[in-house]
Image (cartoon, rainbow, N blue to C red):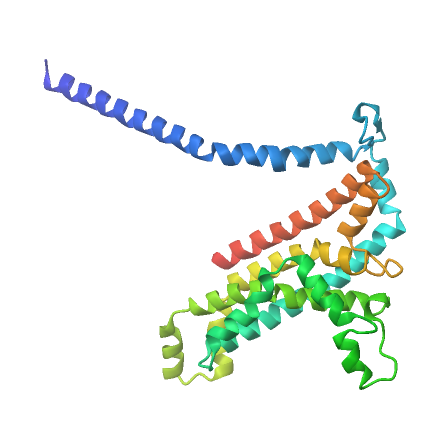
Length: 309
């Protein structure tokens, strides 16, 4: 056997071993991801496609085979439905009230607790502890605070003004009251994320800035905020998505009232699905919400990708 023949044989055996290893690795990768793919298909992909399918029907939940195909009828109805646009307006109002406050206040607290202040470990626990409560517990606490006759807030307001308003029965104050409850409840999540981002900034950057004579404002503007930008973007988008899906607080505290002043998109979807039993139309509203949230996620991806570059 010639040397060339032996080299060719060894190369073929090595190629066979490499190919077998790659195939085994690919198979292990598929098996590793298989449980997730099954759960994803059953509980996300299938409902997503089924909802899209239902949105083109006057859906009969009891006898689906008797559902009537109406094409884009539900979409046309949605665009001309004044109550739907009221729910959109209320949801946007809630987002405006909560998202900037939750991001700015969490940033302020994260930077403050990061400094050498007494009891900062206790402060971290205090700021985060409301987040571990369930929505029912949070709303029951704040229903007691907002109570018109015996509520804690109205007691102190009564010391200042003669007739304090019944906040949750006021079209003017109901949504801000729900927003305040949400801010108190969810601030801890944003605080933890931003505090971790602040802790991860290398100390040598601040030492170099100090040597260069940079002041507190310049350090914040040129080092702290740019280094925390990915975390700030993440918190902003996650908070936007969560606020756009607000439901539990509204459902328990006001039920969408008074006068539809707190009727949000998810609350409206719930009403038309489980009160009016119009599941096809509810699927259409759900898809509107889905498109909005996908758009926000896409913006987040593009902005963070640009930031990484």
